[in-house]
Image 1 (cartoon, rainbow, N blue to C red):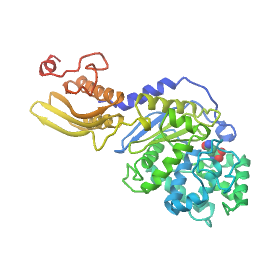
Image 2 (image 1 turned 90 degrees about the vertical axis):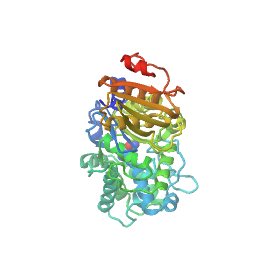
Image 3 (image 1 turned 135 degrees about the horizontal axis):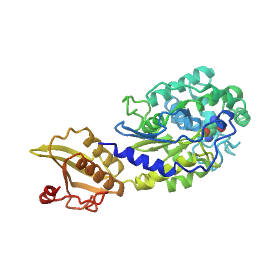
Length: 419
Ligand code: GLN
């Protein structure tokens, strides 16, 4: 069966592909030269499945998307108490590079703006660490989160270092209030290299999924972060990840997210998914224009808004039984995007040898539009592969008795025999 999820993701890319609003970041010369056309989207599920479409092998620098992960590394190594003493957790409502500290405490207000991120970077590997050692620790952390060895883009580092006046000003300000002890030059060098770590959308989706899953990397199974660290990072990302647009983003898209000026955008759905997009043209706040549109479409079409989640416990596939000429998929619980995706994966991995396939939906308690659509479309594709298919759905949780191509969904033995 072709991947139904990837078909959906491709549809979403097609919808935004021709849009060319926004402009590539030009304050970093190396980014100003970047090709503006690449477009990619990836998702990593709680089972460690990666769905990716578009330019999904293309590497780009993380830039500010490194901030939540560096925050996670600092929280994990120094403890929550120490980190929140150094950097606050209130949304600033300001631009990412605003020259601002909290008026009373003289601490950066959150780790998602540059002032906070420079201070967080300094907490990693202790304040006496050399720049090289600190960067090595960070690259190692990020590589474990991604499940492969990542590298620093030295051209982007050098290019940004040459135009880093604003970040240097921030570092001097942090030093003047004893928030950091390193020289401003070293602090900015370390932070700039952190920002220049190269990733693909697939890496970011896996890294995001690790946060969403409470710290266990879904591909390697390694516990990298404590659940409390992941909760803290995602909470701060939800309120401050999208800078001055954070409130509107959370209300309309509802996926905690972090953007970077190279064009990446990474989001997490706690307990479910890591999501990432790449498209280099940015809006005035420095967020990828097409990336934001893709997230909006995912949220609306696939019901991924955090505040509209269908409650679901355990797997949505209760069991798969083969009896005589029939294979029965017994579903249960709430059927949202993740629930339906579990069914599709189970169906894909099942070697179906019987001529008939039935979905038993009697134990499904709730469903949302994307859940219903995906389960029925999965079943229709099984029919396309030569099987006779039907649903047992007395409570009508799968909605209209029609497939997407307009044909009828069989619910009785007589109907299944007509196929
Ligand atoms: N390295 C960039 C900077 O400090 C990161 C900014 C961003 O991605 N928003 O300006």
